Image 1 (cartoon, rainbow, N blue to C red):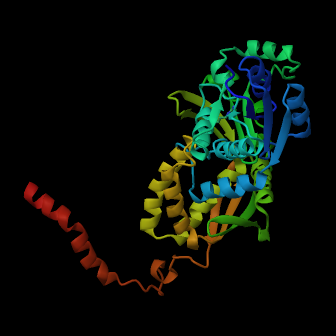
Image 2 (image 1 turned 60 degrees about the vertical axis):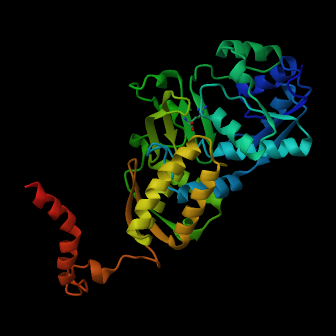
Image 3 (image 1 turned 120 degrees about the vertical axis):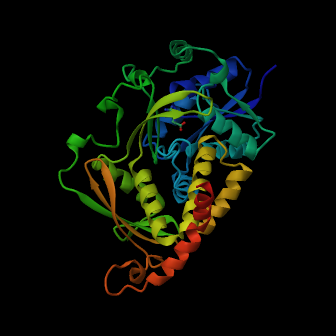
Length: 399
Ligand code: ARG
């Protein structure tokens, strides 16, 4: 029996998702495959993708430009959450998945499909993110994952595709697996599978090697309003332009390369290379502005929330109830996170060298060591007596 009649497939134009089209039809009896390509700023022409999908046997190919929503509804909240998985990875790939899942669910409803599909294998995080996001948005919708079940090697997949006119990737010598969008690039596999092997320069596409970066530093000021980045050097920019501009600026100075071994949801450790200049600069700047505008207890409590938030997003739980509750907490904290952060870009570093805010809690008359000092020094004595009292009593009876 056919697994589904009409399927909306998340389509990237790559070999795996292309092979999914004939596979769904031939092996799983699907009558109609609708390919859906999301333009999230991967910088590829989406025209050829459409032709490719149709050639592979799709009944139609939907191309959805959702760059703006991607930045506003997915990246900006993650910036407000200072989200870094395992303290390093700014989730550039992970953030795209819940949006693509939403597009699949919407298209399935619109075109009366009885299932959606994706080309993820069974070893990665992305399958988890797609499946869980889809079940959260429509618990009744079937999800098909042919590449998780077909058991074909890379060579076999290419050979299968060739039978249906799907041409193998031109650059067979480029052994990496890449995921790319407006927020950055993720690179894995090939020689990178050895965690001790230094990535070749050829893996990078949006950041310069340090030897090729300018010999003069460049300063950039990012303006935030309620935790949302809105200006660069006082120029108001729309969300997509803002992140693109920061990718260029950061990339030019070699900022935003990450080389890490990370823990996948499925229990595997994997070696990943990322280049995410804009997103990383925004998170660093935003977190810095919070140090000026949030109280100590909110900051400290929020850091714990951020850790949980990052794990949820990494693990595909974007649409989960806990994530929703954390969103509410984070939104509340952002009310006064407005101001400007000054960053010095130089030789791979984005160093924060200044910050200011109309809501600054930094009180010069309390902080100063000069004559204007308004801090009541005598009050410190009583405070310390009480602050240290439990420890003092503890030590007294121990003797
Ligand atoms: N490990 C990263 C993540 O789970 C990136 C995965 C990127 N996928 C790829 N085909 N390179 O978010």
